[in-house]
Length: 268
Image 1 (cartoon, one colour):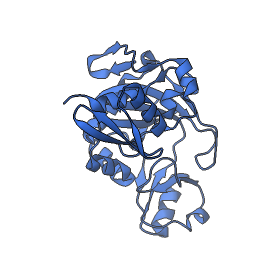
Image 2 (cartoon, one colour):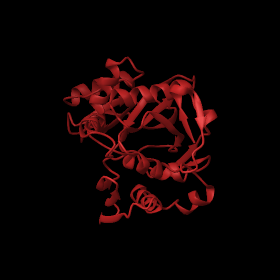
Image 3 (cartoon, helix red, strand yellow):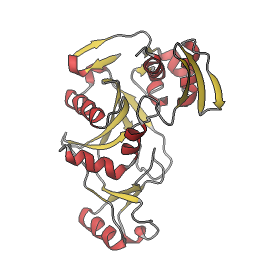
Image 4 (cartoon, one colour):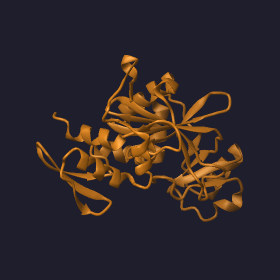
């Protein structure tokens, strides 16, 4: 199912809604494998060039190459902008969007000042992806091994993480991500998929606005929803994984891989 916010209407698409049986069958498939399987279903004759990373497909306009880590729907410039977490925050500020307090400390003194101001913070690579090397810090002693200014500092804000997936100016899926107690340790991720009637109109509109600001045709916008109902933008992703959309912990499954390939192969 798609939710096209600008038209305030819903529509069904048999190619996009994935049955629970299909979802269960694909629980162990990563994004690259989901894309490869969907390419087979579409008759695109996929062939691995780098197993589980890059494969070729045959389209009416010739051979194309699918790399799940770098969406071909987005320009290199757009992808680089959102990969830079500090630049993303700066641009969000310029558009007066709800932003997390942040800093790019140049030394330990500046880092300690930010920590003292906010009490508990998240430290992550300025140019990072996924959840790699993210730390939750509450003591000065935890700041000693950080390479400045390669890490962005953000105020730690507890809440409920909501992901809004946008494809070609449409919100096509919404998830609640539950990481358990900590972002710093292995945990059982719970990803709860929401029915379209449960989606929040304001967040749908903001996700589309953010996609437009960064000129992203595929993006996942993550919001942190606080206990009082207010929210802030947690992250903007240019190459979101597809696994949990196909096989959520609960709620409707969405065949994002197929939707993505249909967008890639659509006649211009």
